[in-house]
Length: 189
Image (cartoon, rainbow, N blue to C red; front, side):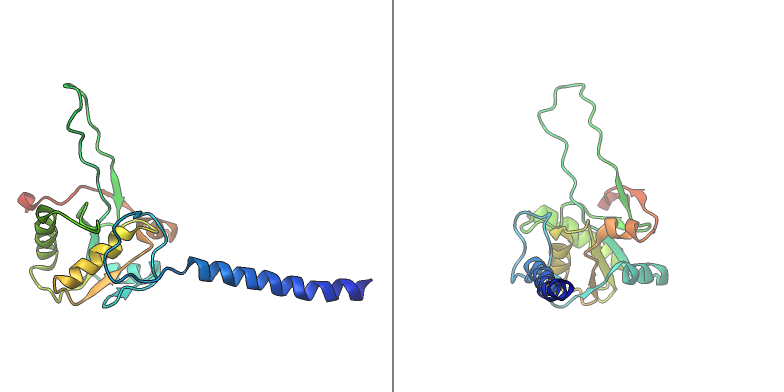
């Protein structure tokens, strides 16, 4: 009886490993040629051509070393235009990596010219106008906004681009502090 059970256990263990490997393969996301245009909260690729990709430890090491501009690109919904008069609108607070510049809405697949200008101005401010200055993009875990924004920065000519796909959720899970931030405003500088 024991021999029969041990003979059965080997194929079952092998099948379990095979199914686990299939799950990993099924979750592998290929890097697209262009921008992600929809379903921004979905599994992301492990790579971004031309950029460095870091995990929580790598992002924290860059943050501790200083010298890298951390750019949070989580989108922020606008205040609805049709709110009744007297309605109080409360913006949702954003908890982010300390010292990060929040540039909301720049990570969509297609952005308006005004948003592109805002993004370029934010990048120029964060880097002192130096396209070789290190920049790190993040958002949330499984969020294409940071992937798109990092790709766009590369297309704008930035040469030291890092993408942190785990975002603020990965940062907090690693035990690092988050602080409330406000969106960057060009006229505030």
